Image (cartoon, rainbow, N blue to C red; front, side, top):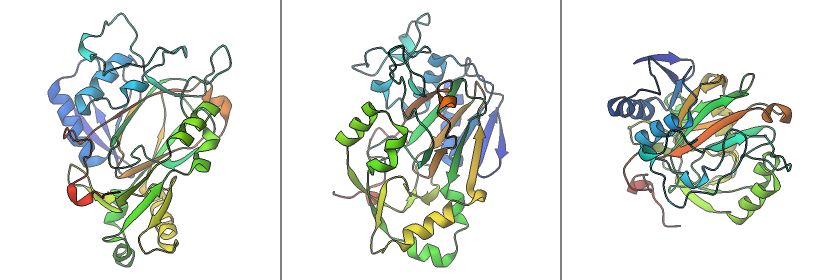
Length: 304
């Protein structure tokens, strides 16, 4: 395998074949993800079982109880326990969590976040959540774009006067239902309403690979310790500069892995008709791979 540096803090892995990889390969990819935060693969086979095996080897599968979709939008009952990836019958389709606007025959959406533009977010909503997310382009993805923002690069270039305002500060985060409701159907809106929660995080963070960045979940409400709101706004103005962003224009067979502690991502398109055809396979996982779901170091925990 070779690694190609992409613009704005992402890397592409060349010479990798998802149908024929070793434990050594997956270990290397995990370490690469911890170091680079955004890792891209292109032209891979779209078999969902091979993809699931790769993510399982990198950090396990956290959202196994949400793997319910097939390519036609049909839904199987959720797994009651983590599936045995290596004893799965290869002749049987391996289900996945679909990010799509496709509807079933009875008019119901078959995937998550089926509507419109999805603003900057990560999948780590608190210290007990998975810190890695993988997306696989299966079909209908051409002409769509996902953008990532790399806080590690931004922190390294942060003006000293802004860093002094960040250093040693924590923030209270909470779900803001209104910021999410436009991209969800009624079923998902109800789920969000029933699962509201708050959590605390230090702004300055360090992942399991020793990379430092900032946790800044802007699609949730955020109250920074001792801040009147000006620091939160100044951080958004600073971080969301083009020079800290990687834009991925999807093609079938693409896979993007990203660290969820130190990056944010965003779906750009607002045209719902595009998402009726677009199908991404989403798996969350623990790139820290410590066996402890509260992977953030003890100094970064709070009693909430």
